[in-house]
Image (tube, rainbow, N blue to C red):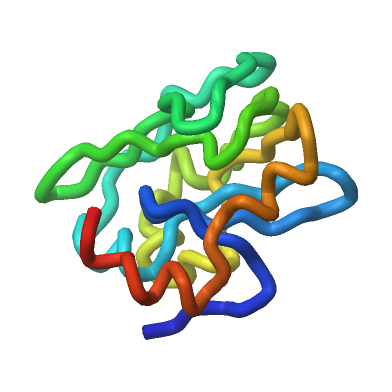
Length: 126
């Protein structure tokens, strides 16, 4: 399984990559494999402030719908609108296709997330 070491991971299968003080948030390769072919990505409210673990939006596949969670507390500042028309990008390249950008309340909170090895060890538990 493809698991980049340049980002942090939430046990709920989101990845986080810091980008100029903002966090790019997407789903892991493991998550997209479990969901199957994605057909919808949405319900992300720009400007909404979220607590860590709070639902940020949803992805839907031919098999199931799944909530996407805020990995740390912060404000949703952008949704990747390309995914509205091309949700399958999350299947073909999940680590290049961020879903939303989050302005964290405290950037240090990212350090509490899992590294690639830690995520790999727990990914099948959730």
